[in-house]
Image (cartoon, rainbow, N blue to C red):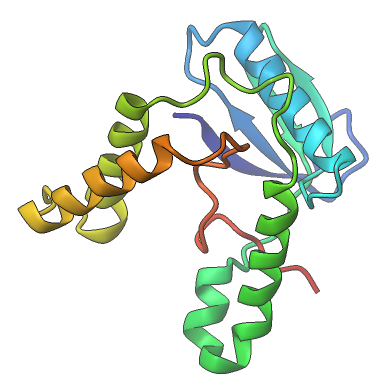
Length: 170
C-alpha cells in the first residue's frame, strides 16, 4: 500500500501544495511507472485525475496535484440529499470509465475469479464491517457476484472508486 502526504511549498517546485505518493521500499520501478502511465492515459480519455507534476520510479515516489480534502463521502454526510448531484457526477464518470476497454497498463491476465473474490472479501472486511469477517449470507452473495462477473464482458476496473477516494472540486 502506498503512503500519501501533503507537501506545502515543496522545494524545487513552484507549487503551493502537492501530494507526494510514496511507494513501499522494494516496489519495482515498473510499478511506479505503471501508475504514472495509467493516470496519464485516464486523463487523456477524459477521466478527471490529478495532474502528475513529477515522479522518480527508482526512488518510488510520484508528486501530484493536491485536490484538497473534500471527499465525496464528507460532502454526502454534510449535505445529505443536496449532495446527490455530486454522486450523480461520480456515476457519470464511472460510465465514461466503463467505455474504456483496457489500458496498456492493465494487469495481464485480466482480473480472474480468485483475485476478484479476494478483492471483494477485502472490501467487505474494510468497508462494510471493519475488522470483522463477513457473515455467511454476505459470503454467499459475494460468490454469486463473482460467478455473474465471469459471464460479463471484461472491462476496465478501478478497484478503489468509492466516495472516500473521490474528491469534490468546485
